[in-house]
Structure formats: C-alpha cells, structure tokens
Length: 399
Image (cartoon, rainbow, N blue to C red; front, side, top):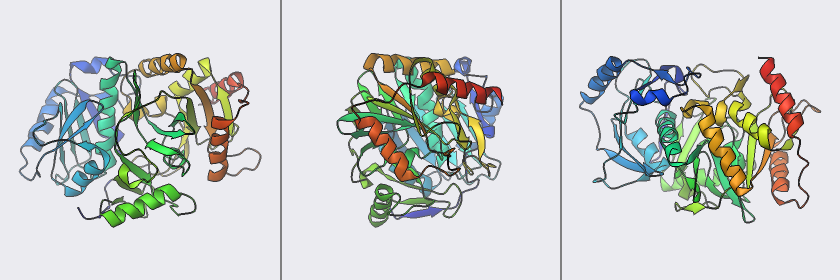
C-alpha cells in the first residue's frame, strides 16, 4: 500500500452526532448524555437502509481485538489502510461479531449509529479517521466488563522489569510519554486489563504530529520515518491542530510486535494537563483519591480534539475516556480498584501542564525523568491522597 495523506472534514470526532440503539442501552450511563444518547429505532433503520443500499463498497475487511471480531465495509481505501495499520487483520472467511458500514461518499452531517443488540455500527458524513478507531473502542468498552476485563484509554509499557499504565486524554502527553526511547512499548493508547494481565487492544499507533522532531520525540519520529519508507504511513490533516500520524506498531523499534499477555500493572500514572497549575509535578495517591480522580478525570482539553473545539478549557472526562466508556462510571472504577488491590499496584498523579512556580508548562524531559524516578526509586513518594482529593473537590465545586 502507498503512503496516504488525508485532509478530513471535520478534523475531529463528532460526539454530538453519535447515538446508541437497542434493549442493551439500559446499561448505558445516561447521566453523560453528550456521549451516550439513545436514538429511536426507526432512525437507525432508515440510516441502515441508506448505507446498505450503496454500491460503492470495497472488499470487506475483517479484524479482531481482545476476542471481538469486526467486519468493515467501507468505500474509502484510505480508511481501509488506517484500519490495517491499527488492528489485527483476520482471514476473509472469519466474519465479524460486529459489522461496520462506513461511507464517506454520502453528503450529509456527520452521523454515527451503534446498535448494541444487532451489533452494527454505521458511520457517514465524516472522513475523520479517529471515528472508526474510537467507535471500535467504545464497542469494546461496552462488551469487555461482562467478562471481568477492564478496557482502558491508556498507554502501556515495560521498564526495568515493571509493567506500567499511563492514563491521559488527548493533549496530556500520553502517546509521547509512553513512547519513551527507554521503554518497551505495549500500546500507546488502548489496552485491556484481563485476569491474565495486560493485553493490547490495538496493534497500531495514532500519534499527534505537532512539534514532532528527532530531539523531542525520537521514538515516534523514527517510527514515522520507517513507516514512510515501508509505505504504511497515513498522515491525517497535516498542519492542523489535531494533525495525526498512523502506523503499525511494528514500525516502533522498541515495542512488542506480537500480541500477548503482559504482567499485571506495577505502576499506574494518571496524566493531567493542568492548565491552572494547582497540582504538583507528581503525587502518590491511593484509595478514595484514586477512585475519585479516575471517576472524574480532571484535565484540560486541547484544541482540535473534537469538532468545533479551538481553545484550552478545563474538562472532566470520567475514566480518562468519557466519550468511549459507555457504561456507568462505577463499572469501570470498580474493576480498576479491584485489580489495583489484587496486584498491589502503585498509583501516581502526574501534572503535564503548568508549573505554578514558573507559570510555564513542565518540559517533556522533566516529566519523563519524574516518571522514571517514581518507577525506580527505592524510597517511594509520600502518599498525598488527602491533599490531592481536597484540591480536586475544590475544582469540581467551582464548576
């Protein structure tokens, strides 16, 4: 496949135009209506009939993630290559548990329909690549908790015989920090915590390209150059605020290229891009502070993450991925707390935003060193859960 460059419309996700259908919608967290809107069955049927009536689809593509199989029908070769980069492709004979109809030729407003009973996802009116990726993650995040598996919007890596998870929304530095040259990358964005350990959800990377240089992001830069040479690179919205690059994880030299189970998490890092500078560079937390921070997910949303978003603003995204975690928050936080307790995992809050002492954003090198010290130190940080929890509650109260 040749390298691909695509300018999408819109340039971000369209959460206002996503709807769920079916009896299983009773399991959704309707207290978050922006991301968990329930639609009318007749609307789904009309949209389904429109998409399935199109005659411009390419050959179907089958792929799999954490035991869930998908069949993709798309008219767009660029999106097909993106899926090839991001997921484990399976045989043509292996039809999916879920079916995706995706059509970029239909001129309309972005629209995403997910039928939880019929296991069908419909996408039209948008060429944004991340809509397929995050739609799949949302489906997986709905399905996995039934099997005592925690889906997580986080990076994962090993370092000095430890397994580490790094939670963070777009703009917090999750992808960049988990792709440190000293780490061995498991995944830069999505993993599952099973009873056997940590498991990949994706087999590709989807990295922001803004500020990408061999000095600041050596691992990602080298992977992109190798992907370009191997003709597996997908460039999305070059020059835009939310510009991204997609490539198979096999392009990352210091990454695990085969899917397997990894050891349970030794350390967990919650990244917050704290634009107000109310949290220190790093804090060790436990108990209620972990649960509360995970359930609220305080950070600052960066421009371009969603369609129409063009400024930095304070945001709370439960489970560090509210748009993609459709069940009630306690389902995910309960699984997380159970697994932390069972495996004695350490938890740290890391501020990748503003240093209150200087008024400047913490440098990437500083944050990298801070995280490595937390992993390797023989003298662990003092637990500051009480102070962190108090500060968080003050932020919530001022909303």
